[in-house]
Length: 160
Image: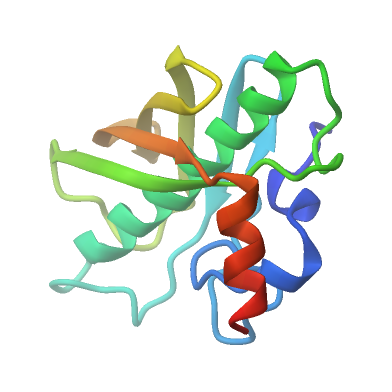
């Protein structure tokens, strides 16, 4: 089994609604990184609906967002030949999220997301992500994730 990216995030800032393991009301997504791509499996619940039988587009965007940013973090650690979670931490935020909703995503299926790095620099990653339901690609996105400078991360921690 590939490592879970979100398990390597610093404990005190793992509060994101989508991926934070310490957010009691969050989705707690668990993205895996195999060294080439990030994968995620997530099963929406009945209340994640837009129209009867269709997954809410905001959930789709949120899953793609958190999963793609996690994939960017994992790729940055790998590019620096460091284990995920090593100090100083690498964290990213979303600079741009562009989702194409190809066809309605049916509710009642496990969703499978696959994210790959298109471009990587020490400060930025461009990630392509596709979301599948029942084997069909329903959504795809390009996400720009930017690295949070260590001094900015320290400021965030000090305001909490």
